[in-house]
Length: 426
Image (cartoon, rainbow, N blue to C red):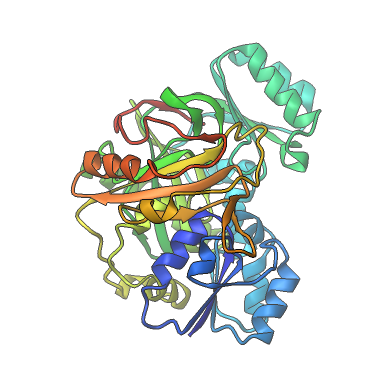
């Protein structure tokens, strides 16, 4: 089969890495890809958001299957366009991807179908949002309604901080039109866990639970990022909690989307908060998380393409998905200043040595004509290791990262080192 993966980050590198292990794939392509993906797949210089260009290329090059990984093309309806062109595609259609593209929609879906989440209100007018904050106090959470690269959430510790966040989103348009509508919700506390699940519109198959580290600095300090590291499985996610989530969140979500005429085929990302009152939904994403995917797919023993095909065929319940009895840790090496201001274009060294001890997924790299690699983004690399225990996986990822160097490299020193860390719904 000729398979195309859409996207160009660490998540897509991990997906390509796993797909390369499938004997069913004769040729693998990635658009636009990156410096690391180029070692596994033929990179195609088409931006992930270019729906028309991507569909045209897939048709002209007779792709048998397309996997759409990022949120933006899913929200733009790339899967719909591919299907209309007669190309089999993995990922939710536009009307189902809205569970991530609009936080207001997802919150209303949960309210309507009694899926546990934080108390909230939605606002399109600045004055009403500010007035509501006066009635609620702090801490409180302010979220841009639309897509904002994982940075459209502010956990405000003071009322003034919350009001500044609302003004930044609604008045200053910090996130463009994504912040024209804001969701203001209560601040939940407890360990935060991510559960990814394959879905075929009716059935779902959950993956090992993971934990992401969203804040830029150690001890969950600093601004929200797209994720500074992740590990799986999460020790906070007990079998008892898993059973509750399945009955009160996972199955009800899939059922709700189907009943709303938005059957979900792809990967649903359940961002959960394990509160004292029980598990609640922090957010939905309509795709694999990043960097959770790097850790989770490192534990998959089954053929990923076969799972994708089962989702598209509606036969997910007939597939036996096997996982390693082990743990994985992904340590993100980022550009200094990320996620605010950072520079790119710095040479990267030490990758060959690091690759002897772990898999190094590329998130923001560029390969020059002479074959050398330079930084090309905020999150640059995801050093991912597997161990019999979480402690072993964490130690291995940090050890493997030691030889890697590039100017202004920044990383957290506490990824996975406190599996029971308490977080807030960032």
